[in-house]
Image 1 (cartoon, helix red, strand yellow):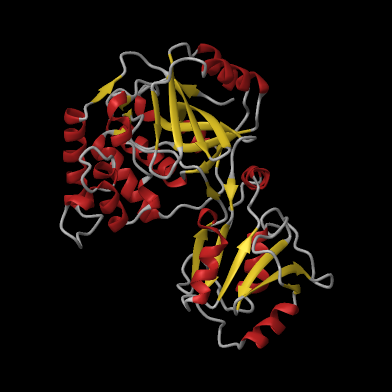
Image 2: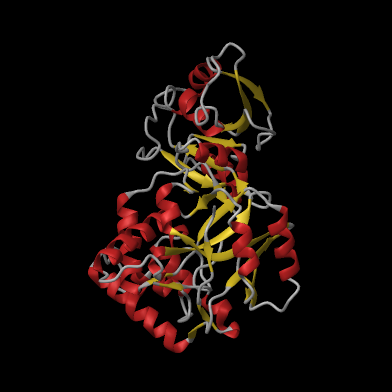
Length: 408
């Protein structure tokens, strides 16, 4: 069963929501965050990326940064102001980007279910990133950005959500990137909570580090507690839960700085050992099992050669795995894409024109456009308790930080 819990959100007043809402902390670097928050004292980036208010070059993991986060959080609560709901609620969060729409349920999910695998994972986390967000949560005593979960669609939940969005929203704003964010507060929560008890599993789509950090923060707070009951707020973490039928994954493309000492022709000959190559191909592969490659001002279409041994295994059969195992590693010498500085990753939202630009300007030697990983592939890998290769999925549109905060 999936446990979801209403919570008393700390939130901005509706007329300040647009100023407070910010991009997730982990999609921008310090300079980008500083530029986005410039001239906006209410931007939540002052809390999620507090180094932007300290001298350039400040170590982002220094004590001063976390102290600044607390100072900025307290200031935002007082000046925005942020107010806490009088009663626990669930919320609906609708995202509209172009012709794509998805509606999720904002709730607190069980850390016990995260720890025991009822909430499934598909990504390996880095300890340094966990350390950062764990300390951030403990210093603020709050989870300030949600984890994006999904589940296999259930009609009875869809019907309840459709009926609930007819009311007046709490927030309705359009972010600078054109994405519309609409949130409804639900005071009647019993039926949705009950419906989720029939959902066998939840899956992390995006936010593995936030989830892992919430678990670590809970362990520390539990140890400090004199009368732990299991019902404390720190036993739950902030989530937005979308049906899998609405989730959209874009491609996560790759560029490589050099051809590993090969000329263009030598490189193409090596690729032909594993793939068939078609010239003048579409920049976007038409289906799974197809890759587009940009080299020397030309797009090539790749498919595994009929003579090539087909991969087996849930992860090995993914397009990102095949590209790594049959081309990036053996031909270009990229053994570990987590650490190799010769490879860069380009989110699909930036389009194939960005791949062309990087190659044409000499910033990369070759680029690869992939067919997006499917939601069903994500669920299959998670159900097998396996790990996807790094940078396999790019989710759009993204949720905003600072609109609904869970205090612990």
